[in-house]
Length: 454
Image 1: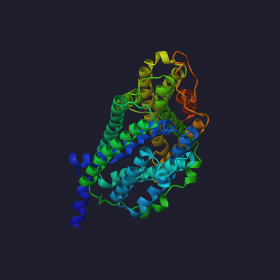
Image 2: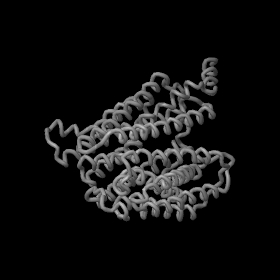
Image 3: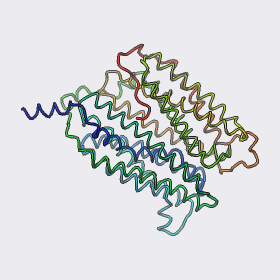
Image 4: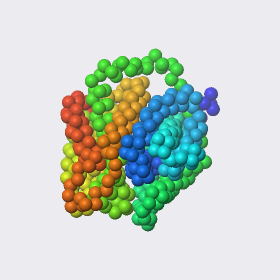
C-alpha cells in the first residue's frame, strides 16, 4: 500500500528538464519529413518527369493511408500499449519509405524499366508505407504524454517542448533546402534527383538523430489509467451527429486544413514557375511563412479567450488570406519581390486560422471528454481525405509543368496560381460564413486555445 502511494506521488511530481527535453525531440523525424512532404513532393515528382496526375496519385495514396492508419493505430495502441515499440517501428518505416520516395524508384531498378505506370505505383507504395509509419509514430508519441505524468503543469510543458522542436524541425528543413538549392545547379533530371535526394537524406539523418536521443532518454511510461469502470459512460457517435455545431466545426477545420496544406503544396511551384524567382526562394519563402506564423501563435496564447474572440480572430485570419489570395492571383513576375511581403501575411493568417480553428474543437467537446477521441479522429480523417482529393483534382487539370519564360512581366493564370491563390481564398470565404453562423459559448475560465504546432 505504501509503495502504491509512493508511485502515485512520483507521478504527480513535476518532471525534470532532461525528461521533458528527451520527450520533446521524439517527433522531430515526423515533423521534418511532413514539412518536406507537403512542400516539395509534387514539385519533385513533376521535375523528374511524372505527369501532374500521376504525382497527385502518389500524394493521394499517402493521404488516404494516413487517414485510415491514424484510426487503426490509435485503437491498437490503446489495446496493446508499448508506446516506444510503436514509435520505433513507425520511425523505421518513415525513414526507409521516405528515402525511397525522394531517393528514386526502387521497383524500376528491380524490374529494369522506368515506365510511368511502374514509377507511379512504386512511389505510391512507398508514400503509403511512409504515412502508415508516420501515423504510428504520431499517435504513440502524443498518447505517451498523458501516461508519463499526472501533473497537469508538466503535461503542458511536455506539449510545449514538442511544439518548440516542431519549429526546429521545419526550419531545419528549410535551412537544408536553402543551402542545397543555393549551392547546386540542376540542369538535368539527374541533377534534380540529386538535389532532392540530398534534402531527403539530410532530413532523415537529422530526424533519426533526435529519435535516437528520444529512445535513449525516455523510459516506457509505467502509468496506466484504467477506464473499464467508465465504459458505460462512453458517448455514442450519434450524439455528435445530432449536434449542428459538430458539422460547423468540422467544416471550418477541414477548410482551414485545405487552406494551409494546398497552399503549402503549390507554393514552390508558384515561386519558381510563375514568378521565376531564384531556386533558394523555394526554401526562403516557406521559412518566412512559418516563422511569422509561429511568432503570432505565441502572441495568441496570451489572450483571454471567449467564443466571440475566437470567431473574430478566425474571421480576421480568413479575411487576410482572401487578400493574400487576390495578390497571388494577380502578382506579375516583374514584381516577384512582393511575394516576401505576402508570405509574412500568409503566416499571420495561417496562425490566426489554425489556432482558433483547433480551439473550436475544444468548445465543441466542452466537458464531453469521453467522446473527444472520436471528434478529433473524425475531423483528422476528413482533413486527410479532403486534402488528398483536392490536390488530385487540381493536378488533374495541370497537364504539364511549363515555366513561363516569356511571361515574366505578365500575369499568367496557371493551375498553380489557381491552387495557391483562389482555392485558399475561396475556402477562407466559406469558413468565414460558417463561423458567423456558429453559436459558441460566450466565455470560459480556462483558455480554449491550443498551440499552433501540435
